[in-house]
Length: 343
Image (cartoon, rainbow, N blue to C red; front, side, top):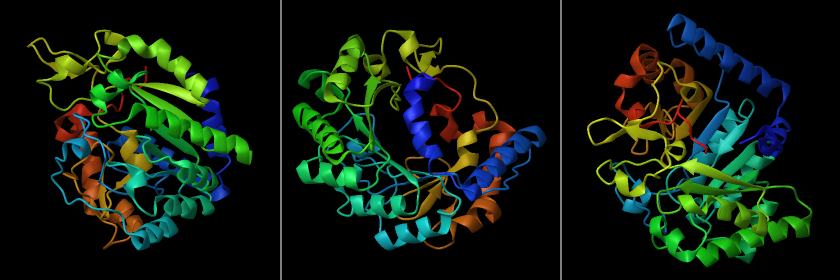
């Protein structure tokens, strides 16, 4: 993506900056640079970004998704609004960017747009990612009125057959209609936000549709069309999903008939320094790649995130492990940090 494509979001996020948030972001950046130099897990600031999971439930059955496969190895459920408000109140003075999604479909949470509104009133830039099936007329209007900063809508095909190859159980026409409703309400209410991103994961079956999805995004009135490389978990079936064009995938042949991530895995990770990720029930995990909370770093529902973030032994220990040998951490073996994610 070019700076021109990214600028509307950058400008919107900068609009949420305060002196305190800017100073905190600088402290986190300095911590990260010092940690890389000293190989010690310095942390002098608070989370700049935060991901919170509204629910693990999803209406689709996508074959490379733990929600779609109903294959969670952790408890499933939906976020308690009281816990959510406690977390936002605790971090909002320093926090800048809230990602209100993780696993599951956010709009299934019955209070989802109220959650958005609460964070937006705190001056945070809020973004979410949806499969687009719940954007009826009222939901589309409320989405625009909620203060949501960015709406990512997954649209991995330009026709019903191609779309349903991965988005199993999905309704292609319903997603298009939902996007149109949000765009129409933005125009009707005179709002620039939410920025509407059409996200197209490039698979083998749809890589020939890239030109067409760009045209479709323009026709729908989306602000951007983003082409994302696919992440796979079952490497035995990867040949079916990964595109033939090597420039459009994050994996390369491993020389033994299988696949591996392209490039090296450096012994540092900006994601773990800049932000936190919380599951619906308050478990803090290193990042959005820990979908089953295998590397739990503490419980926000039991201990404040600020205490865990700086003083928690689990957080410090995990950061130290990253600096000492990230390639030895199982979670990092299929992570895109340092790998080309967008086409």
